[in-house]
Structure formats: C-alpha cells, structure tokens
Length: 506
Image (cartoon, rainbow, N blue to C red):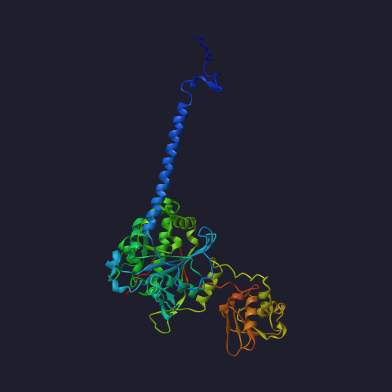
C-alpha cells in the first residue's frame, strides 16, 4: 500500500491548496460546494415561484377585468381623421356617460320601458387631459340640450339610422349605441373623442362604497321623494343609494332644472377627486385594481380601455394632477327657441369654447399663428388672387380705447391692405370680421392675420368689402385675447369646496 499523502492544515483563516480546485479556506473543506449548490437551487426555486405568482396574479387580474368589462365600438360610422393616441403621453379626451338603463341590478330604479333601445345618457361629460397633465377639463353637456344627431350605424345589428335634427343630446345613443353619442359630440365640438366610459346606476353606488363615501354639502335640508335624496343642512358623507340620489335628483337643487343637477354632479366629482388625491388611491396599483374591479362590473368602454395596462396608465396620468388644475365647465346654453323647457347652445360663446378646446386643453393659451406652408399646392392657394391694395377694409373701434384704430390700422396696412377706413363703434366683447358678397376670401385673410377662428368671420348685410370690428379683447397687443368661456361656464375646480343651493320648491 503506497504511503498516504497528508496535506497540513494551516491555522484557521488560512487557505490551503486542494487538488484540482485551487485553494480553499479550511472551514470549507468538507463536502465542497454542496451547501452552495443547495442554496442556489432553493433560491432559484423561490424566484421561479415568485415569478409564477406575479404572472398568475397579473393573469388573474387581466382575466377578471376582461370578464367584467363590456365593450362597444368607439364610433357609429362617423368620419375620423385622427389616428389612435398614446394614452401614456398624448392629450386624450374621454367621453364619460351615465346610462339610465333599468335592467338587472338597475331594475329597482324603474321599469325597462323607461329606457328605450340602448338607453339614454343622463350624464354626459367630456374629460380632456393635456399631454403634460397640467390641465384637465371636465365639460358637461346638459341632457336637455338640443343638437343634431348624425346618421349612425348600429355596430351590433348593422342597421343604419337616419340623422335626427334638433333632438335632446341624451337620446343620441338610444338607437345605434354609445358610438353614436361619441359621433354626436365629435360633430358638435369639432374634436375627436379618443375613448369612452359608460357607467350605470349601480356603478355609482359601488364606487361610492368602495372609497368609503363622498363628502357633499347643501345650504338647506333637501328631501326629494322622486330620487330618494334626504340630506340635512350642511356637510354629509354620502354613499350607496344616497350618493346615486345626489347625482340623479332633478328637483333637489337650484330651480329644479338640469343645470342645477350638473352643478351638483361637478361638486360630487370635485369632492371625489380630492378624496382620491388625499388617500393616494391612484398611486396604489392594488387600490386602483380594486376600484377597477368594482367599477368594471357595471362599465362599458371602448376596446382601447378594456385592459389592465390601459386602466393603470390612465390612473398614472391622473394621480399627480393638481386638483386646482381640474376645471369643471358647463357648455354655455340658453332656453331653446323651440321649447323653453329645453336648451340651445349660447352662441357665439359655445363656438368660442369649442374653438379654444380644439387649440389646447389650456384655455388661457392664445391661438397659435399658422405655420408657413411648404406644400406648393397650398402655397399657391395661399397667395391671394386679388390686389390687397385696393380691397376696402374698415376698422370699427369697439375696444373702448380711443385711438386704437390707428394701431390696428398700422398692422393691417403693414400686411398690404392699404385702403382703410376708420370708424368709431359701440363697445363689444369680442372681435369679429364681417364681409359683404364676394369678399369672403379677403375676410378670411384678415381673420388669419389676427389669429381669429372661423366662427369669428361672418357675412353681414350692409357691409361694403370687409369690416374688422375690434372688441374689448383687442384693446392692446397685436392680436385679440384668446376666446374664453362665457361668464359662469367654468363652474369650479376640483380644489373648490362648494355647497349646493337647495331648491326651495323641491
């Protein structure tokens, strides 16, 4: 038997040569690598299990929300000129609808024959979020507003429905579905809605329960047997049936009309926004998913919002928004000429509001100057087919500032229009361009010179050539101030804590 070789073991802490393995610390000599391999296996198994749990959790929520959500087409045949937006970084506009359907869980609020077809939209709001998240507008359309509903095709049945002039806006989706309501708002505003969300009665109840109630205020006790709303004077926390009653009551606030109800709805949403912000709900994915689970059981959305990533993206956009930058706006209206119990758009205030929104979600932003065209065909068309120097242009001074026509006249003559007449006129709020027959092209160029929207250009009797009627919005500067909503159109921001005026006759 050959002599055994012994490797001397140095003192603790020293390393020794080990055949084929380099050097080892003496405390690691027994069963080399066995414990390391064991822990590697355990760690790998744990990581794999964790990954499976994450995937299973995510897959579960994807499946659950997908199972909850009902989807519908974004439009009903209306022409779209814009492609899809990137919900994470682009300006987005979401039409929010409240349906009056009375089936299933909503059957307790009436019979099915009280909501025909696809139902009516008792609530219609356009949520407009700027690309930088610094401006959010919530524009309310009264249900009694008379509008022209375009021709719509029902995506479920392929049935074509004719256009309907001068009907209540809440009936837009009754025949051809939610897409027809989207097309109607697009036609009315000149914008293109990117998404929609439609909730029924039960969604309001469950959402208010999920957040632990919403704080509301009334200046006097309210008791409305029709909606079931019963509130004492002052501040109350409403949820469930009382939250729904607060949003539905038609006789409880102001003069018992639709505008009073809209103010209450805006106040409710403002309070809900403050609560979600204070609780950090929108920054907590678990809370967002919990609320989404509650809401989606009673929600219909377009395909673009029917996913967990889309809902989390939207929540991420909203979580850092300053409530003071959330504007609640009611579309300017007047009693309808055809029916005093209905509403017409108040013009030109409504056109100015829509024009301002088309330009930017920031309603304080001035209209941008049109960039020079590089397209030869449009460049040729942009060159006037007339001699500027001989076109009769009148400047009517309605600014309230003496001598203002001289400053404006210098701007116009500098652009080549040198045949000018200056007259004093009655003060008016906004600048307009009027023209006589055959001068529409000249009027359009004068309007473009000052960044005025098409709604500010009108043909008028008794005008020779073109008249720039300068209003108080053009008292200074080289351009009129940008159009703003009519007084009272911006009802409040989400930072305002308002108290609703109880209807004394309600």
